[in-house]
Amino acid sequence: MAVARVPFRQIYFAFAAGYLLSYLLRTVNAVISPELSRDLALNPASLGLLTSTYFLAFAAMQVPVGILLDRYGPRRVEPLLLALAALGAALFAAAESLPGLVVARTLIGAGVCACLMSPLKAIATWYPPERQASFAGWVMVAGGLGALLATVPVELALRITTWRTVFVVLAVVTLAVAVAIWWRVPDMPR
Image (tube, rainbow, N blue to C red; front, top):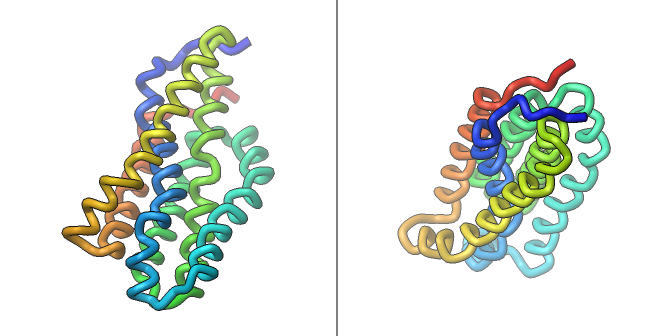
């Protein structure tokens, strides 16, 4: 039986930031698609490919990430994957063609694939069953906030900057969240 040994707020904000970014990065293409289409001459099929690439990479990583989370724990797995997502966001910002965007979206999808399962694994490890549902609910709130941040705030940002700058900022923030998880979240008991 899991016993609460870690204050929830100690891990919540780091994990919540990761899940928020996961949803933001999932949804942001819908908002930047007019600029992508204009800047890189992408058609609707190309935009659909970018969306599906994210989800295919995300799905393909689920089994290996589950094994890695069980073996090494969320503190060791999620920061590495978020660093991969940060690299993907930086490459997306620099991409000049559809193949570059596809590679970048693949890295982003693979990099954020553990952003929900990592906190759920931590919650199952450190907290008693009667607390797990409410703690998991708080993590889900962060995902909803990420979806919201990908809409009007990104649209407003695009009025003063480019989609490339938005992705540079997302790359930096994603890397900062990876560091925060590494720093704030303790290792799982062996």
